[in-house]
Length: 215
Ligand SMILES: O=C(O)C(=O)C[C@H](O)[C@H](O)COP(=O)(O)O
Image 1 (tube, rainbow, N blue to C red):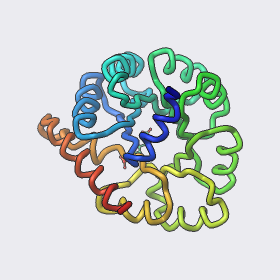
Image 2: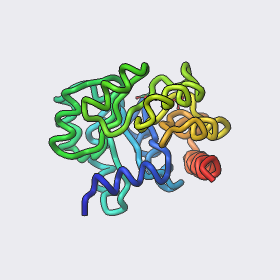
Image 3: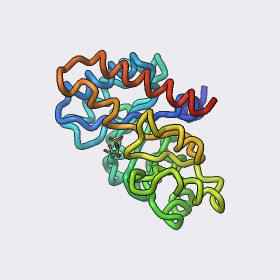
Image 4: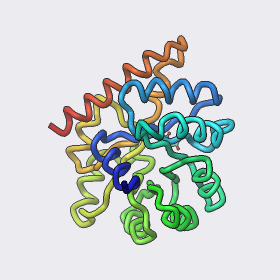
């Protein structure tokens, strides 16, 4: 089985990559489990979360057989990329174009989502060997930007990240993205009362909105 292809299909079919950036290891694990229960199939733990590598190791051991794609986010260099892969990450995400991360990821054949903002950055990201381009921060660009930029650069697999919600997700898909990066709408759903079933419900709601946007 070619895991990378399966994982790329998982991102494309569910249409969501969940970004987990929490203040504690315990919260990251609770959010991840609740979101997976809600149907999330691809997620990243950002390297800013305390003990991020331990969380990645735990989640990838628990969920490898369930074929959930566990990744590392905010990977800024090759060293972090290799450490994340050794911990079990099969997806590496960076906010910026970072050739060292892409080189390490491609060597070990894990998926990359690499940040870009301008047309020049989008093309440079593809040329550098990224699988997917993270359009970041997407809230300052808006769906109209995707429509405009994919007119000449239609081959770019874009994943807008920042400010995407169930209410606006149809606009992003209509504009031509292949999936969306989602953080706070799902990860902060239990913030007020610690009721993580709200994270599960938010994930289900978001996935349904994506399915609806594509139908
Ligand atoms: O943390 C990262 O590594 C990021 O990619 C930045 C944010 O997490 C996203 O911009 C999510 O934004 P929201 O979905 O609006 O919460």
